[in-house]
Length: 473
Image 1 (cartoon, rainbow, N blue to C red):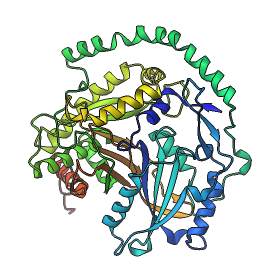
Image 2: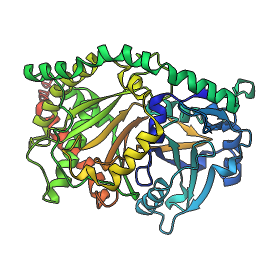
Image 3: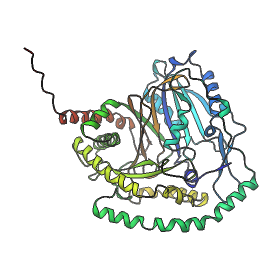
């Protein structure tokens, strides 16, 4: 038995039929590398063998009416791979639009909470004989870092790598109703003492933020973002699009401007959004603001799976020149990072311990029903996450991974999420959005190559030209 942390459990409490808090991923595979060839039954059997050895794939939620604290994870003694691995086929010609439409439908469906909170959908019928895997895991069980770690256990550096040793499997264990109730009672009884410890550190945060803002060294404050068409109450419909960029070209821009890869990534997002909003006649005069999740796994000693903080970042969509935009974003990110690091890394996890299913659940349903996201000032415009991946080829159950597009959840008030993952020599950009708030998502995805070309042109203009070599006499 392992009790969920408050932050992990809050993703359960905040979930509604229109706000599904799943972390998805689209993996494109070259099935020709699978030893012995591809068959769905063989792949499902191999997946079943491996997932049985990984606790994150076997654990499920357990709760009771007598439990006053957060739910617990227990081992699913009836684990059956057929409940988690499914087979679908897209219609001809099996192009990217057909694949994205299928995956958008999958992302729009909730997970069954009576089972381990994950699914994988094997998508066949793609052009050139490729296959794809649409993965879906609940945010209560993974964040960006742990999700990548869990998926890496299904991947290898060689197509014929052996399966993990069964002796390394670890069971989560079960829990009786009495154990759950007593543990929950003790946890709730300790809350007043926990609150007393947290208050002294939390009270100065707002005054310090205001003081930093006056000095010009604060990240953007919540509720200061301009309103766009994708900042409103979301529906349960999801659309997906993606783009793949050359990582070496991204690094060329990084080197030319003495910036970081994350600065270039945020500039690409900003440039693509600027093009998209300009085409729709919706570009705000002030800069869009993105929330960038920041992993605090290395800093936090708190229990739980989700260990994350957030940084508010100016995307400087108000600047027309792409080179100036990159420079401004890089400068703003230095300030935002210093500000974010000055905030206690455990604050979000500590305060979320007080989240309760009744209050959070009712609040989120009312928030959605009353469409409050349409009424109050915009907290932030979108979520942008950048996850570094391995710089070498990967094989998923023997199949060469040709692309891996991460897809995070979208929230009321911010109906667009952009997640970027580097893999081998490519930068994979995954976009997921509320279909009604962000129409024609492919036009946004297709703006990313154009945005990179703009930055490359600026990088070439910035780099000094080499003098021609003198002819030898």
